[in-house]
Image (cartoon, rainbow, N blue to C red; front, side, top):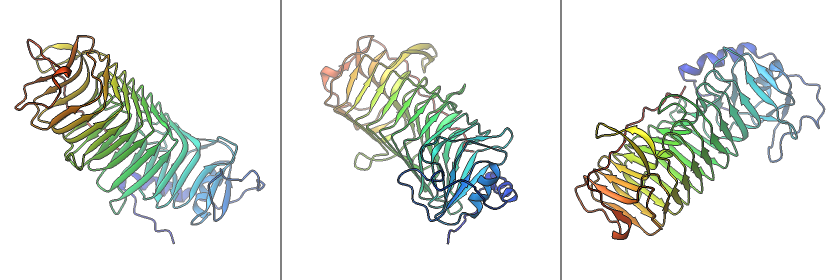
Length: 404
């Protein structure tokens, strides 16, 4: 038996519309046309080629069943997936479009649900909202959502989890939102790109907040109008591995308030390339327990921003460690051609360690600059630069966008 958790208030109206639209499943498609993608097993199969058959199929296919889209559908009601699988037919690429005024496109409410092999577009809210555990999303493209492309938030019992494999989130208000204690998301492969907005929080590629846990493995986060990856909150945890964070207009990776240790880091970035981001490749404020191992931070673009010196300066630093941050270790990471400095450490406490790797100066001739700090920072002398006056810094706390 599949247990249906209570929906959050923001999603309740979606399920009501869904239930009212359910009409019973029917399909004239032959078995070949109803074949799910390779690797997807189904206890039963229902075909869907329009809104009516899609809604009724999801309502009636039963636990472990699959609804297979054989053609593109425009839905006038949000679609709810409750413990079943919704996929495009093998060899096809259907598009699920949210009609104007319908809010979000898809809500996943049942544990073990799956969504794959299709495109989702046009949501007036979130493209795919997940409030369930053990959800799998694979080979899905989400575009045109007016809020997050995919949002994973706590369900009725306070826990949600999802695995995203080869998923593309592009040209939405922002990309992936992971928020809340008890929420865990792993994204493997895929891309988060060209999400757009007009503020520091809008247009973010990936947002993780309020104690959620995120793993990015082999993901490309690029060309977003806001921050590439935004991490917020003392108990938030993240691992970024073998990924590329590039050409984001408002910082590559930015963390604020994360609290861990070097033995149990709040953020670990390993074998990842951060390149051509604006202002700072990786930076943060009030951090503890951050490790960067391997990879590179390069070609950060110097951009004019207001600084703590009450002036607008061109800032383009590989790494920025600000606001009392401590227990921060960078090991075997290469720095090259950053617009201002390889890195700036400002207002730090003890426990900043930078060892190994190749550190080349930025365009202004600066390697790592340590200033306004209470204790010596462990950086080889050959990798440090001194300035006649402190550098201006830009370390605003970025407002986290809402989930739904």
